[in-house]
Image (cartoon, rainbow, N blue to C red; front, side):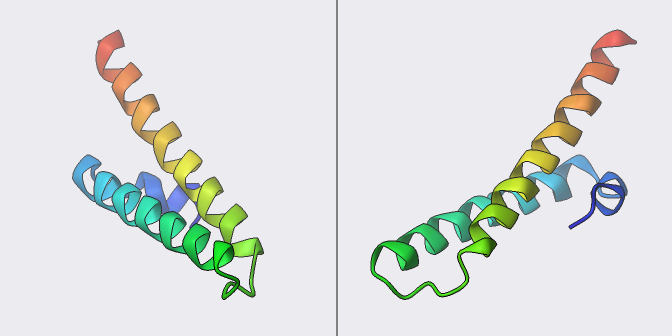
Length: 67
């Protein structure tokens, strides 16, 4: 998911996306450990999505504190 798409979402929606991403990451790691995961690049993508979401949430938090 692109950062521009994420910036259009509200804080609640971003938090829901973050929870979904963490759950997907857990499932991907589990599947990798038992040998069922074939697309290991998805792990990297999910980690980057988590980082993007956290960055946007932090930017918004800092913007509120600066006001």
